[in-house]
Image: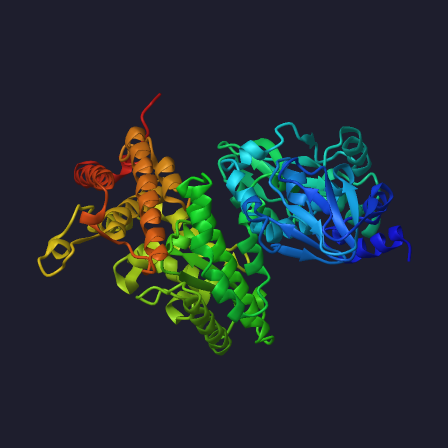
Length: 620
């Protein structure tokens, strides 16, 4: 077999090249330069100059050193035939290594960047990078601060009308060199047309070239906000098996597109390695050691400059991935039960995407209508195994049993709607107020996207002002405080402060009630405060101040919990007040005062202002 034939065979079997179209591999083979090396000979030193190529071993072995400070140690990696190296320096265009020497007689193909890059911007190529780039400490050391989706985006994408023929889109993509086109579907909805979607719909499905854009869009077109971190946006793309994400501004209007290529040029790919490994965990037992790596990933994200709120959102996404993978694995062992017969709903802090290491995993389940009790019990047995698996992975359940394995929290959609109507009429009976508060934090995680009962609560609450008053009383029942007698009692030494119960929960409850009052579907606490801001009960200035307070408290909470885990302690919301720095104590003190002032104002407002005027907004 000649060297070009050997290279072609390796490319067909090795990621990321095997994921590229045949014509791309043909160009790679034609452009490759194949060189023989003697034992010990230098193949590449990307610590000195950035690599302008990717290298593939054809024969023999090469050793790769990833840290320029350890070149006198054994190689970090050894590559045989099919081994790929040099891509990190090529894609980042920085001198981040590796240094590679032949360990014996070897043959290596050098593939110029112009041809090689095409193999790394496929979904499989992005996954390859996510799994490999985490191994490069030099890359981590020199990585810039994290970019948001808005900063990564191409702000001048090709935008087409939904009726434009597919053939015209293909010509425009070819002429402009754009990797995809955005289809404006109206009403703030967007979809993507990519090379892959054109091939599928035209060549495979047989649609004519005159088919309109709306019929040749990709099956998944994830949407990210400008303010989303690159990590959040990449997770959406990978979970959707998409080629890019649409980026929108705060007003929901298109601002750009981020393709897989932009992600590979940022530090994001390396830090999403854990996410990819969780998605591919072959057994439940493999999930547990991967879950234990989450705190390390969070610390690295913070160290690289990702804002704490974004780190917490990524943590919630990692939890989502663990839950999805465990559910998939457990139901694979029970093939008689279908995954499309239920929706798993994340509740509480994970439903709001605000989970920190100490957070409980709350859940509920909505079954397909018509399912009998016996069948539901069979599903609940699997959900019990899921909860046990999550506990083994360090994701503990709520002490009060807020889990879809229980009958109270696993019903058919029709039963959920019927129960929700009852809670609106009688919020005292059947734990109505508590269940309503749980339900409006629900986020679909597995199955359909239904939140029928929560939608019913949002739409019908205006007709039940008495229920809204009771929910307000419930929201204000937990008061923000600096420290209670129990926390400062002499027998509790050292004195501890529960940052969740004494500061964060009162604010979360206030924001949830405010969102219900203005009929907002937002889940996040900050977004809920923003939605309610500017009303008579929550002035815009106070809403902005409370949003800042929430962000500051969550940042402090995350930082202390990561310190606890680093020191071998379980993550806890109980902080030793005297061990906190004077600045942190001052931050908590001021934050509690802000929350307490908002609670006091709302209490007085409810006493003296008619509920019909609560949502009035001042005239501009």
